[in-house]
Image (cartoon, rainbow, N blue to C red):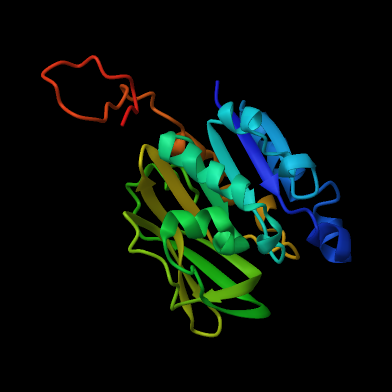
Length: 243
């Protein structure tokens, strides 16, 4: 049983009629609905909830955290961002969706600005699978996913070199973008998925839903043995994580 928490800023869907039409209960609840059908135990949380819906109790019970945010990234409390980072380092999976690339937890984990080029345009985006053997893209129906209308994200993208580059997007204007990237930080795994603007039906696409499912299975904790830190004394009687 995998416990998945879907966090959403949940401001865009309230202010934009097209976004509200596509996701009437919010992107978080839409994603939770198809993940529940896949058999995951889902919890949702939003920015305006107490503790942003991410109390230590919620995060401690989360195996994989999905994060969607847009223009309220700076509104997140620093202490919550830091605890998310701690949980990732301890082994929680972290899936970063679309503009959450500018979220505080992702920036802290990457150690860079995570800035990029972008255009607000309704143009074709073709998302190419460039690592077909990777578990995140297993069982897709094609070697690419094409969206007739999508927001343009483009290089340069200020991130560390990914451990695995799984997806690259080509845009109608000629731009390219690393749209599916994996990293490991501490005991945790991180996956960034670029497509997902709120005014386009990206998360209605079955291949995108499958990628998110596969990413959860890839990122979920593997229950590694305890890690011991501290001065070596010829014995192994140190408490886990003791310094």
